[in-house]
Image 1 (cartoon, rainbow, N blue to C red):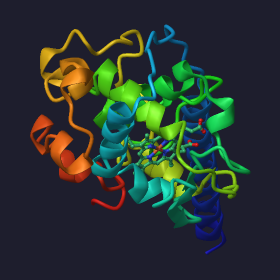
Image 2 (cartoon, protein in one colour):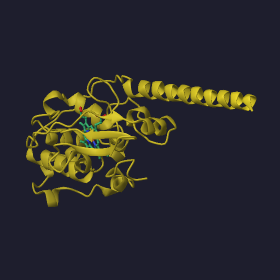
Image 3 (cartoon, rainbow, N blue to C red):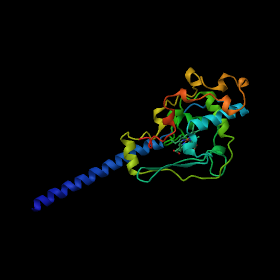
Image 4 (cartoon, protein in one colour):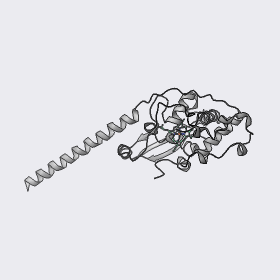
Length: 238
Ligand code: HEC
């Protein structure tokens, strides 16, 4: 009897140590990926603010799902609120209190949107930059121009946290948390891709555009079959 107690005691001890070691491995590995710094070439986008470009920029914001996560007024919003998995907020993109716009240079906007990298180089969580990676320089410049001019909203979102279950799923490759890991960070310009620029009136020549949104803006749904998915969080879509 005593012998069995001893053996099961050892077994429990071994199991506890194994779980603790696994937890440390998961934590250290995910922490390293979350804190990695991504460097990249600076974008050379020219942002103009004429009304046709801003109209096009607004159209991109409205059709590519930005407002689903960043809020209808782009003042920020909660994307995931499951403490065991993660608590992630999409930041306030405006120039109001708590908004990121005043801190972001054109290059920072480009890195965040097209490459999933925050100012300072850390990878953004959940932000679906893989879906925006194919935006042409013209489309992206229009988008940035519009974002720089949206009305300010005062709203500071809390800091993001990643819970133990979220880390485990991320470790196991079940959550595509960081788009930056799957994007070629060396490529900045997308104008080499003719299909990506095809639908941009900015590239087609601004002079030829009428001014009203309903008539100027061609549908973007044919740029990618995955447009519907782009409007949803990768977590929520499962
Ligand atoms: C599925 C939800 C989601 C969608 C859709 C989305 N974002 Fe985000 N975005 C986020 C989250 C979450 C963050 C913050 C991630 C972090 O801090 O790790 C973020 C961060 C950003 C940042 C970085 C801000 C900073 O702190 O420097 C910018 C810029 C941005 N998003 C712009 C956009 C634009 C423009 C679109 C549409 C083309 C868009 N986002 C669509 C969730 C989303």
